[in-house]
Image (tube, rainbow, N blue to C red; front, side, top):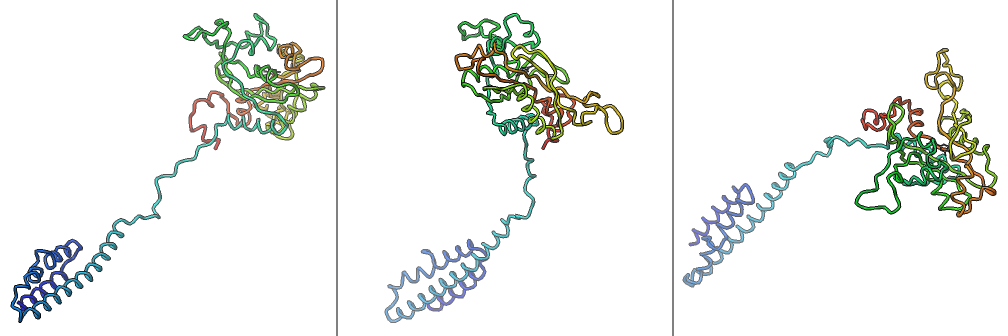
Length: 362
Ligand code: DAH
């Protein structure tokens, strides 16, 4: 019996030494130490051994079991360390590899950037920025801006009317009472309705007209300006426009105002900025005619004027009394400013969303 126990030990030493994985080692452990293992059954049957040999057999079997247990523990530790090492090598992540291609970071649209530039300049001059509805009542778009019904000036802004005869009937609204605003000027009246004088505000936003060519699009952006208070004059308008346009087009710019007509300002002007390419001379250094201002030296930008007392008449309840306050208003297109600043020849390019164009403004 003791011989057999010694044989088992020799076999176990060989098998444990040969186990090349923790799974193979576990098989060996079950074989030698498991419940069905030979050594276990010897130990279990020890009671039946004759008393004189009991001590020696028991001691040998226990010694062998302990030896095998210690061997297995030792081997297990070595195999586990080797397997961990192998899995670390196999699962290795090479952090030095380049990641998936970096995503290009987007940027603001040139029209948005131009709008923000104008806002920054005007906020710096103490103006507040307001927004108004793009779907507007005829009343604000025309009537309260001193365009009486059937006034020919309405024809200048061929308009998109909104059909309000749909499922929800709007009381008192006829087929031509609601429209896509043709300019940002309606906010002059809405702002004065909302706040008493003095008021200094600009309104950037989308406007709509039935117009489409290289310099007009059915949707475009305008900035409206309004300043009302005591003692405001046309000279203040000129100084304000000059300060704004010098920020946008450079410190050497000049402006000029030409008489014009707008129903809601009196007197009314159109204002021009001196050409920043030829420095207002109309000619380039090589003597050629300046293509930007077409040799005129001035670039037309927008309309302006002193708020017509008739407009104040629509907001007299908010404290706008033409005998005590005066004001100026101006309006111009954001696309035009962006086209000039960036040398974009066709306004429609801004709305094609072609990244080859947009990328150039990053
Ligand atoms: N709303 C005018 C247009 O779209 C521009 C304009 C002219 C605005 C004179 C003004 C102004 O505030 O005083 O053609």
